[in-house]
Image 1: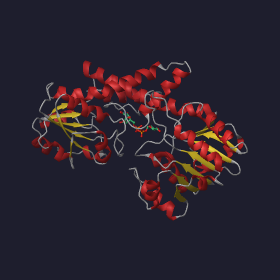
Image 2: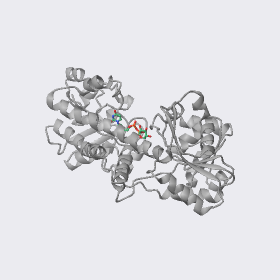
Image 3: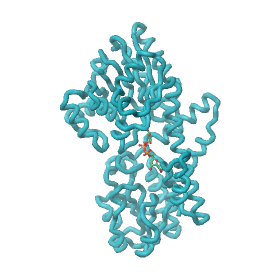
Image 4: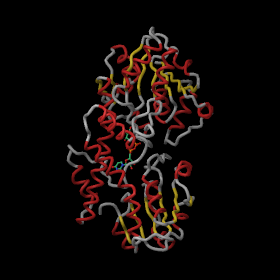
Length: 433
Ligand code: UDX
């Protein structure tokens, strides 16, 4: 199959490289000449484990190419995937569909022979209809089908998620379109990955409903954690206790500083906008969003309280800035609100993140960037673990203790054992325990 990706960002690049690895002939298109030049030289613009090698192998095998020439990519393709960004629109939180619509218009001009246009970008219900309308209007002769195929890739585990998915969702009712999709995903059909075919609108909604449900699990367990702290329970035990019920499931029940990243905050907001437009309120999701928004600053206050409610003139060391480990992504990371809360209260903040410093510098001002956890801790009044990178799981806590001015450890990801920390002499503050 000849497959073209419009947009070589996170989703387009991972999907393009994986499709090439399935043996398809893939062209990744992007308007950004610098990005395409870099990709041609094997330089990957994002941090994603395994991606560089995957791209390199498939480029070498001649199955993966990069171009800024959309027309060249689209002419003769069996499927053209739209994998452009759909950021929150400034002001109202609706998904901004400018790039999707522009891509549809451009694709339309270059279609030749039957082509499936596949929406991989996260788009509100009804966008597939709009894409079909745009293409038809721009090129009334075009022979095409529009299919929705949302992505469910986690950053840091995207390649594995792509190749061993929990499920693949394909939405559309055009028989030829579905045939092409089945061919493209053939390796996954063969290894018995569940593939769910449904209407285009159902597929579009599935993406939002899935992310909103996962966000709900997180906000739910985070509130249970708050209750645990008040009544003297341990949220990790509670999470395990409920998670072993198959109907609930053990995943996404880690209490922490709140969810961030490129998907949950944006998609929950966009779902709320759609629900308003269609007059079908999503009150649960409303609560989930508000619980999460409030939680981030509350985590800053938690650190302040651990330092007896006053951080003026004190220094706090934060380990981990990205919204989760194994990524350099700072989008909507809880660390941003935590740093602000600490600074508003007069604290000095030292930080260390294994991959996120470059992105962090764009959003976090007036903090001291350090090149190791120990450099961050040196002379600080408290240490707080904000993101659970593996390298923070085995810190030399004895050494850290000698470097801190006060023995305060605020573990926002519950990666340390309270008893062990306390036996070393720490004042240990975790989440929900
Ligand atoms: C998510 C979805 O998992 C993925 O299917 C979708 O396509 C894109 O959004 P991602 O944003 O990469 O992926 O990260 P994920 O691993 O899902 O974590 C999201 C956030 O939730 C992180 O901030 C993480 O720290 C937080 N989280 C996750 C918790 O606080 N507790 C949990 O139990 C799980």
